[in-house]
Length: 344
Image (cartoon, rainbow, N blue to C red; front, side, top):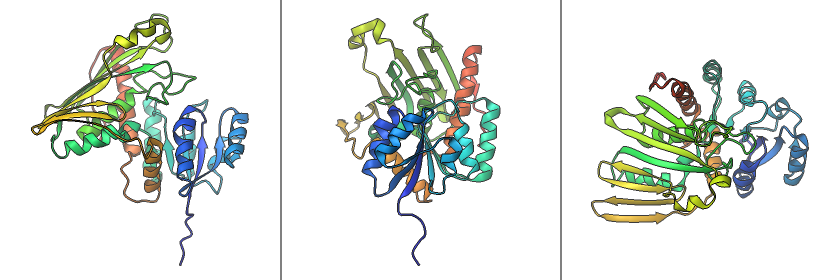
């Protein structure tokens, strides 16, 4: 008997913006044999109307209207808007799988309520956490499992320019920049967990505001995480004020990440360059960006929804990272170290 499951996964998109335009819209178009966007919602309804018309979808007037549509199989939340994390709760209560590009920035009580909701309802949830899917990361994971051996130390720095997270990870939206600890801090903490395949024993953060007139909080953050067996990660992120500092970026060291492993080391320039050295010599690769990042992310979502083997992160990863980063925000103001108290 033929399956009643639709051939294509029908998607409802919440939040339009540059992440939609640059990453997910092109991916859905290339994967049109497996995905169909049936409805879009945005806090500016006219924007949703115009986008829906251009892609052959329907504009929804509210979050509930989109989530409760019978032809929406999965909800894709791409841009933070006035409703914060409310869309996640609505979709979870409706039993709809969720793809979420937003860091889970919320008070501890709210996170615990969400965690209880997801564990009770068993809804599939895939956070974006895009650094896991960068070609350089994928290649590094292969090298760590073969010639380089397990990672022991991660050192690195990334640099942001203004509020554009859509070419490089950075503040959450072009309209309402998030603290660096939230974005890309959440992604960096998860990336270290992903490489070590472990939870940190302790995490500490320190930051500073370089420009007194900055209205986004710290514009430099350093995060240090200690893992079992003496392993450690020390990563930093800085917001570069190009309007004030001008061409000085040309004289700054290249951003990147060093990974020291048991049998060699690697240097990554995100998203697609990797150099590594082991006992046999020194190598470098610039990796192809095809399939695109958006395609890889959405294909993992498809596998997760259809309960096939998926390499994508889950609700548990998003929740753990949110707990850790939430504690970092508190500890930074108090000058203390955060012990990892997330239950295993």
